[in-house]
Every structure is written in C-alpha cells, then in structure tokens.
Length: 456
Image 1 (cartoon, rainbow, N blue to C red):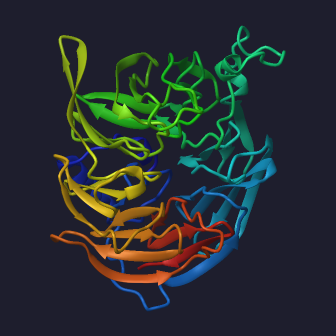
Image 2: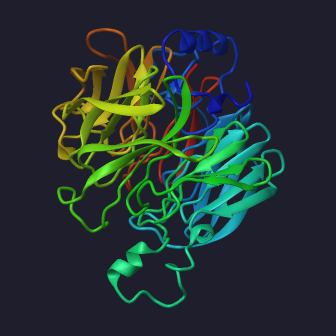
C-alpha cells in the first residue's frame, strides 16, 4: 500500500473499489487526512460501543505542548514534537506498545503566539518521513533510523534580496513585504505527488514549491498565491476534468485587518508537475484566516468551508478549449468550520461548525452536496475544535474543550450516539489535534500526552 496517500481524492466507484481492497488489510494513516486525505478510514469491524470508561487504552506517552497529530505507517507512529523556543523533534513510536524507537531533532528557535508547541502532522512516504516545523524547517528523515537525509526552509530559502535586506524595515508596510514566520507558525502537511514533495512558502513572489522527494532539489516554484501571515491551509491534491492539480487557499491582506475588513481569500489551482497556475478564484466574501483544506467532490466540484464569517461554498470547475473556468454553485451560512477540514462520506459532507463564526447550524453538521443542511448535533452537543474522522459507518469526534470522545453512527436521518467517554485532559483546553486510525488503533492527544485506544 505504499504511496497511497499521494493518490487523488475522489468519490464514486473508484473510491468504493479502493475501500473494499483496503478493508482486507491494515490501513495506514500516513498523513493529515489519512490514506486518501479526506478524513475517512476504510477499516471495518470496529467496536460499536464502549464501556463507560471508554475504549481500552493500549499506551500513553508524554509529549510537549502543541496541536500536532500523528501519522501511522505499518507498525510505527510518527509525531512532530517541539521543545519551546529551542527545537523541533520528530519522534517514532511502536504502534502496539508505544515505546520510542528513535527521535530526530533540529534547531528551530523562536516563539509562536498563543501556544509555542508543535503544529503539523508528518507525511510518510515509503522509507521516508517529511516533517515541516512551525518555524519553517522542512526535513526529510529516514523512517528506520531517524537520520536527516535532506533539509530546506520555507522562510530562509525564499527571501528576496531586494526586499529581505539586513537593515531593519523602516515602515510597517516594508516589514509586511518581507518573508516571515506567521504569527501562529507554518501549519501545513507536506503533500507527496509522484516524485515530489509540495509545500507552500507563500511569500511575496513564491507561492507553492516542489522538491525532489529523494534529494531535496527544488523542482519548481509557483507565482504569488497569497501571503502566509494568516494562511494555514495545507496544499490539497485534486483531479478536475481529468487533470491533476494542487489547490491552495491563502489570504492576501494586511494581517491586522478585522475579519470584516479583510478581502476574500484567494483560491489557486497549480499544475503539480510544472508549478504553473491553472486557474484562480476567490471566496465570495471576506475570509481572514483560511485553515480547513478545500474538499474536492467528484470530477468538477470544490467545497470550501471556513470561519470568521466565510460559511460554506461550492465551485464548479470546467475545462473547454484549453481554458479553465470556475462557477460559484452556492454560498451559504449553513455551516462554518474553524480549524478542521470537512469530510465527504457517501455523498454527505460533514463539518464541525460554530455559531460565533456565523453558522446557522452548529456542532457536527451534515450537509448534502447542494449545500442544504440535513442535521446538526448542536446546540446540545458541541465539539469546540476537536478532531474527527469517519470509519466503518461511524464518526469518532473529540470535544476540544472537555476531552470527551464520542462515537456516532451515520446513515440515518439523524446521527445516533453510540458511546462517549472522557479520554483526555482538558485542564488547559485546546484539545485540537487531528485524530489518526490504523489497524483498530485510534490515536488522540491533548497538550501533555498521546494516547492509543483500542477501538476493535
């Protein structure tokens, strides 16, 4: 099952065939969003209820503060940890027992706003792990030994000699032009496409870049796609009209503008083999801080949801006479996700949604692909930025404020709550990390620990 995370998101017959194939063996969770980058695991035969105490805890390990979720490949777990102000640490654990097999570290001095810990999910591809630290250091690491094979930096490597001079900036506008670490750090999962690893520096002149995944050679760089000041979206692989492309959302405005004053976010599609820009669009309203990934649906649609008043929207993408065109199919306030990406499962879109971000429906919200809200768990059941994923016809969802894990059955007119249990320490709040599932092992984390739950 190597390189499965590099395949394009899809739905329909091909996804069904893939799910059947994978359900016959252990399914990895090798990057943000899992094997197909859509938050869905193909595993079956999972438990449909738990004791009041929750699923059996197989192991617990201490970690530094942060939001970084794990990646799982084979019998190993990979987590990007951080020593605040000092260094990033990529750690490899045994999936069954939780013992640390190795760790690799590199200097990454500097602070981050609100929480100075880790941010990003590593990406595993074959014998290598690609990790992007919040201060901009990108490392390719041997998955068996922890040896760093090559390195790059998304801030230092893309400074413009005409803009990023040694002398202090004389004005605020001059400072904003310069390449810099965002206020909350670089929050991206490296994307593997064929022989390349794709990330997004988002400077004034360089938008998205691709490196040779074997040796770190820079293969291409795209033009401007927006700035990284408040843009936290991972590059998204899609296939529209039979053409592979990378889609990115980014915000071009001054970071101090209010959500209402900010301009729309830019939506950019890039050729993953050359870096050329295929098409561009923008959100139909201000969108100050893009965070959730866009969600490709079928061969010609792109769903986007976001907070800060953005709501939800759907684009249709067409290609005629060598020209790309995009059309807005709908834009509404049915649901508005703050951090976590939407999930498509059996022609339904699932979003964690917030009233304070302008949504009509809150909690876990189910929408059809025409934008209609079908049900919501709110206002009774809210989840406050906790992670969630779908497996075996169920949703596992964490409450980011309480550390309560809930299991809902999908498929009916309303979700059915099967079980819930307090799993994590929410004393300091911000239990926001993405979840990961592999071979019946569900990995969750708070600001102090990672826990492995047996959900078989």
